[in-house]
Length: 319
Length: 319
Image 1: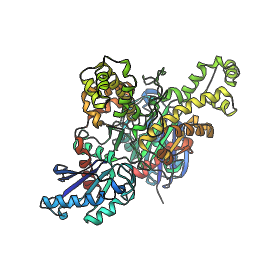
Image 2: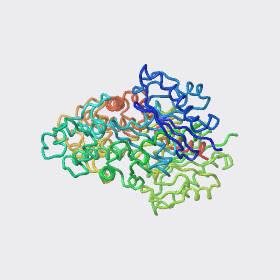
Image 3: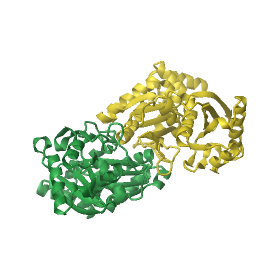
Image 4: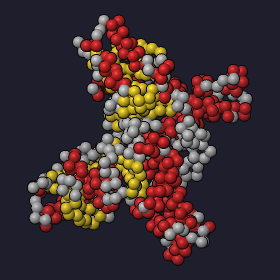
């Protein structure tokens, strides 16, 4: 029988797992909460025992597994599998590869979560057939994964794809978490959209957002997207501004690396064609004609599965 | 005896040639004028006969040549060696690889001139030892060559590295040759610097540039750089603006691909440390701390030889 690939997507809240066929089809998936107590030192034992437990439940042993692929939100050396730091997990200087290999007696390969999600979309999602791919994840922050000639781009010290910190706003840029001003993230992430919406909400008493905000004291990107889908003008203006800066940043990246596909994922991408059409409009304005001609924009299709699928690709192709 | 590599750098004015050792040392170099009459149809015969002639002069035959590498300012398919268009040469739909191979009975490999120059700097110039390299050539326009994991990045339709057309100026951007507004080229190329200088020259009668311009009716980037080196305040301001946008664009690219070295070449790079220090200052402002830590900025060292050396690298590594 063909051996399974195991994909693991370590997040700050949950760890997602899947057993996959050699073709990247998910055979079985599950998740467990991430135990971030004690500097995350239970995470690796939890991963190992959860995999063994689920293999047993499926009447399988490690003999039926080719290897373990892991995506984690961390600074790491992908070749040695050594993690320097994963702030959301509490990890510092963790040799995850050796430790998991010792516990499971199986080969382990790791990469960072944004890269693994990009590979997932390339293998089985909105990036199928594309060897030059830019993936953008719009959530609380903005992350990116870049694939060139079918390979993940890591850069010289693992920082490739930090496109949330491209400077798009030169005049009166807002302070970003990274310490710089005017980053894409301050304008186009979920957080950035909410910040913008709140800043001028009192000038828009006619907006659905004004009403919700005054009633609940809360405003989320989800509410903004929902109101925009209901054609609320103020919400549409916020989404449009977000898409303007996304279109600009994506076009500038595309003029540099000339991708064949640009995949937009993350929570905000649930706005679907509203978001995509607006990004496309500004992308067309800022990309060179031949660059534009070469690139399709698409919404990510794998959702929460992108990470485990990309991690399984690592097992198949990098072990 | 070890076979020679032949590097050819086709430009709109001259064609540069060199015979190189297998280690990339230039054994012999020469150049001929580019005959752009009749849609450039004499160029390929000229290249072939010039190589044969110089081999003969050096008491060698094609038996002593491993192959021919060519860099050209063209849109092409690098794998088939087919050129779709080279505006400065008058070429359209030219199968340069087949035609030269037929004439010389030697294998031929081609790539575009910006990429070939970047490879040259990686092999023997300011990029030595770096596998993740960004090369920027600042001349009449601004070109770029990107190397990731030691390989040239072409992109999906050969447009990778078009960094002169990154939009840096959102408000009141100047119209660029490409049809867009606010491109890096409009601010930081030789042409862009001259445009800026002339636009406000009448407000700066104290400047050396004012005096030269009024006397000669001419203003060049070389004059601006020279005046800046002589601490002329207006010239320094023009150079500073140019470097501000270069530093911004380079940092945004670096946040995306995380290079280990950034090499700045072209005519304007003759300003040397004046330019480099100023670009570095703005690069530091706009790059993420870890991205900044990973990247050295340097001035290109190969000058006019970068093209023939990079073309020879193609022969060594791609044939």
